[in-house]
Length: 173
Image (cartoon, rainbow, N blue to C red; front, side, top):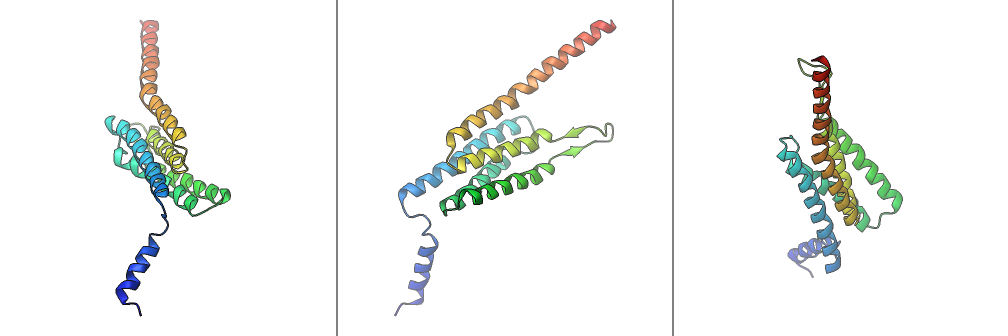
């Protein structure tokens, strides 16, 4: 007859039986670490620019998205089930992103703030989803492209707008 402690230990062992070999542990670690790292890269860029959603937020969004697709995938979910999970991630991140968008202030009610942060979180979730599905190269390439957009576009816009201001001053002068 088993003692109560043996039953408890067997139950705990059974609860951790979802990872059966070193290959699965490695797959889980690579995918979740990749998602966390890529989220951190985008979060660092945003935090460096003084934006509210920084490293921790982006890491958690990416890691969460990866886990949401990794767990059902490892449990044997079919493509339709994973499609529904991804739809839920997109909707959930949309809700989170909506909370970062602020419309108007006292001086300019048409001013909208936080759209880039919301879009960045959406992109971070997509990157985490790709990493969680084992598409690490796609996640890495997407992160590089997102960084290019976040780092080069503000400079390009400033240059174009600065050029327009210069032209306008020349035309008025």
